[in-house]
Length: 312
Image 1: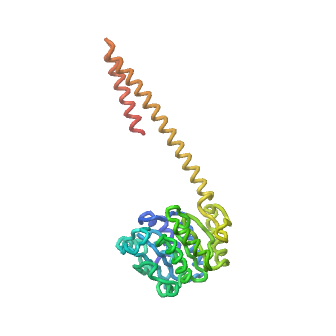
Image 2: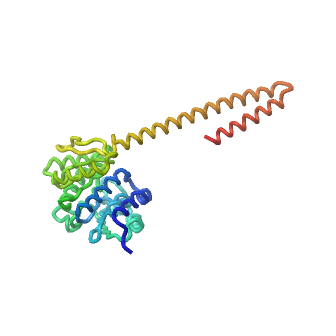
Image 3: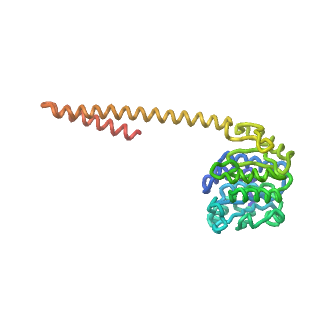
């Protein structure tokens, strides 16, 4: 049976598979990657897809569903060889990864390389990865490993390809932005063009960067927050933060929070009033000749208190 189209596979994984696989991968980032992969199909950009640091496969499977016949999705990770995980930046599990691949990448050509990226070098990168049209970097988060992996990706990516660096600006992993700065301060072959959902998108030349920049602007206008933001001697477009969609989501969240706070205040006021009525009813039991009225008021107050508590 023929495989579904790339567009259908990507949409299915983003909408159904992404939440089913453990790990960290925002939907907005998945949308950006989806658009990059679809544009590459439109532009006939050929090559493999690779990711360093796949964990359980949450983002890798998005990339993998973008491969065509004759292309391979390559996953490089130390997996259970945690002695090679120098900064404890992730604890992958090969068995879980392979199970997720079997579920969400059926019929696709997947190659697993269980190793540290430090065991591979730019000079021989294509022996491991082949010609790569999308190269995702999400492995070790030290400055040295980040700079190394960027050079590795630069050596393998095709002229119209894209490199994606995870955690590029993450306060918990500042080694990544430090390594990125070290790389960009040299003679980099990659040009940043977009940042969104914690990932930095780079291309092998300024012309190709501009091509993808325009494509993303056209495809995801409601996710675009700010254009031409200064970044290490060039400019990038910033997605998600400050976008029309995030502002709308913020307004919705604030309205929901305000409504919830109002509901809680009403409930608290009702409970306080019922507690006062209950206290008054109990006081009546001390008055001679009024026990029946007191019991009625107590039962009524208890029923109302239970009803309020059940609704809250």
